[in-house]
Image 1 (tube, helix red, strand yellow):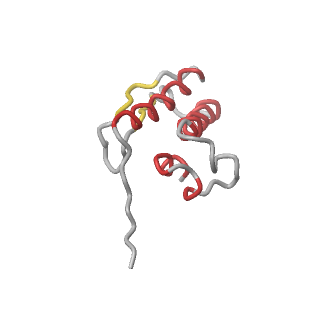
Image 2 (cartoon, rainbow, N blue to C red; image 1 turned 30 degrees about the horizontal axis):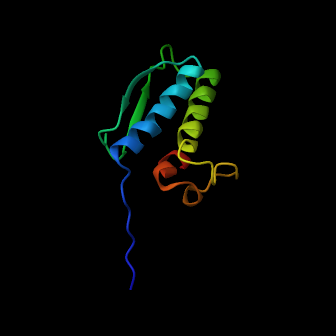
Length: 98
């Protein structure tokens, strides 16, 4: 009999992961409002973006790129295969791959 075990990422790993998302947004010209690593909701961390006048194609594309780059900060395994399979990326990035 085996049991599934999920270990949560440590504070430093969560901070680095969310910082990668925030940095990618900044490079895309979208400064995030807030980056959190205190388990907001069901997540280990989050980055909040001010959509301003609403979502447009350019902002959505930049946000999607930031999601992928943040996930890849923990390693590129699984990110080059499309469609993405959350079970093939690093455990800390599985929420980003969904």
